[in-house]
Length: 103
Ligand SMILES: C[C@H](O)[C@H](O)[C@H]1CNC2=NC(N)=NC(=O)C2=N1
Image (cartoon, rainbow, N blue to C red; front, side):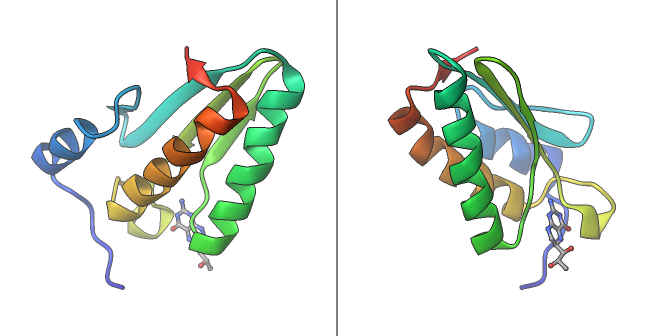
C-alpha cells in the first residue's frame, strides 16, 4: 500500500474520531493511566502484538502506572500517515480492557 503523509487538515479531521490523542511535532500521541504496573504492562504487551501484525510500530514509554504511545511513519521521513491512525484506532479498541483511563 502506498503510504503518504496526511495534510494537517486531514489529521485534524481524523483526530476528532480519537479523543485523547493529540498531534504535535509530526507525531500522534496519547498517554493512558492505570491502576498499577501490571495493567500498564499488559497493554504494552498487547500493543506489541498488534504492531507486529500491522508491521507498524510506535514508541512506547512504560512507567509505573502509565503508558505513553507516540507514533509516526519512518518510511515517509517521520510524518503522520493513515497507518498511524490505524494503529491508534486499534490501541483505542483494546485499552479499556486493561482498565486504561485518560491521563
Ligand atoms: C521493514 C519494515 O516493514 C519497516 O521498517 C516498518 C516497520 N515498522 C514501522 N513503523 C513505523 N512507525 N514506521 C515505519 O515506517 C515502519 N516501517
